[in-house]
Length: 312
Image (cartoon, rainbow, N blue to C red; front, side, top):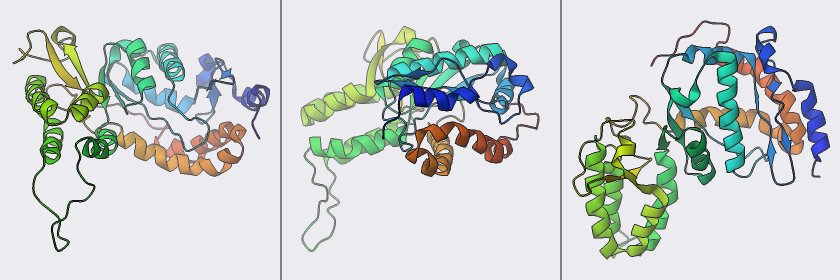
């Protein structure tokens, strides 16, 4: 049965603690922030623990690459809504400043994410100067079959005798451009390749061209791009470049961070499985179950007792 707001608040209340007192709490203690939202259209409960706050202190004076990934299979959320992600980002900035002496609004240089529109809208509000780094595997999974359909490619092309037809099609050529352009070293080269590709694709399949442009690309002002990385002079435009979040060129992506959200998703997948059974039957169990996970698992995985310094 559905739970009422009062029932969820009652389950959360034992864990609502003033985060300012975090140093006096056990490292695994679940701390729920008091800005809870339990409404018919929106539910948002933000929590952390002293162990994670202690680890975050190691990010002082470092460039931060922030990765965000929503977990849908716990049956607690069904979308990465803008209001919730904005509240999460804003609260993270406040807590990081209050507890860890971090200034995330200036330290976060990249936000690694999938293509959920709510996450991107929240990034623009809270981290407007951080580079969006959109996860390439998400893009490939979502676009591959859509582009095949829009370009009229059968799901499997076969010659007589059942052998696969290896004749290259416009879709194959476009697929090569997508894969290769992801790692082109400069945004100027990326822009030039896609300027030519879009001109060709417009003639081959306007539907596919419009889909790519509206879903994965933006024509961004050169002056905006230059606020974060070296840009150079565009070949075809005087003031703007084609930009896509899945581009991971060496001159526009912080070294070592081209993996997108994949490491975070691998980590989330395992702990999601660890709590799912108890939480899906009773969402109120998420709070006590997370605290137990912190104590029994994360304390060791994150080595909260040990001193750590993040490498830039």
